[in-house]
Image (cartoon, rainbow, N blue to C red; front, side):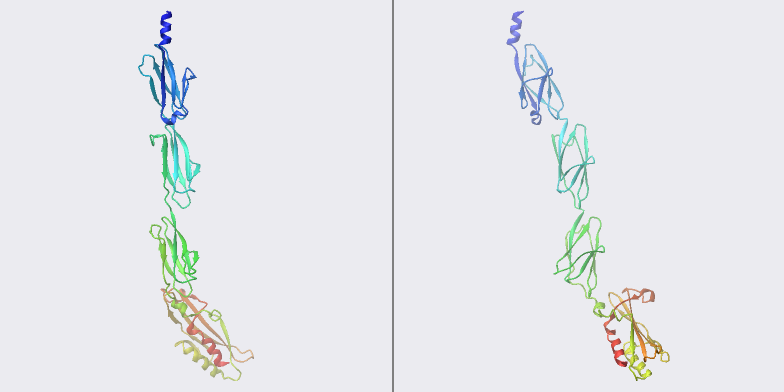
Length: 362
């Protein structure tokens, strides 16, 4: 009996247990009947007596618990224990630093984020950034066999800046009806176009015809040079200082001693010099009205007529009221009354008429 005990003690052997993978080694622990055995960094040594069997419990943070049966009768002196992970680390990165990253509806980072995913688990990811399409994806425990899952999420821009230029300083650039800027020193004006929603560009400047265009997000270039704006013939033909003349009553006082018929004749001379046809010509009432003169321009239709009426005597001499009516319509409008609206300017060729009429009788 004593000989058998001595043999048992003499024939005890040490075995080495190595924990893998590398990621498990730092936190790995091995227990025998609840008590830890010595070792570190994934390498442990256990003593097995003659004809003895032992069961060891192996644990590591983030890995499933494993059990290892070691018998004296085994010829192995080194045991490799490969632990299976029960969670993985997920790294999410984006190409937009300000992007908000949501995991299952909860924001966890900007531009990049890290979280754990457990065995049999799946996470839904949403990434939101101003000016970019919202990005959706999902990650599951089985997405990659590696313990670390790296996911790069490239966001696509849904808007871009474009630049609009003309050669005329002072031109106003409108994008979808909203003023985007005014051209200065021929520098371009910045506008923004959104994906799936082209913008309408309108460029306006007094003395020039409007320039219009449509710009789409899908177009590859970002600079649009419209060059010289076409001159506006109507503007160049208009007296820009005539707002106090157009559609306003102009009082004409005939100088003392001038005969009424002579005054009417003198004033009608200047009227008929420009207006060939009279709609009303009543000398008795002292009332003259011309037909409409129609002027066609690329940007508008302009019609003008003149009316002269004698004012009933108030004892202060002979007086007349002169009215130069000015109206405009769209360039392609049918020239009927309902299409014309009062215009507060007159064309240059009517500019001196009121002065000539007044000078003729004053």
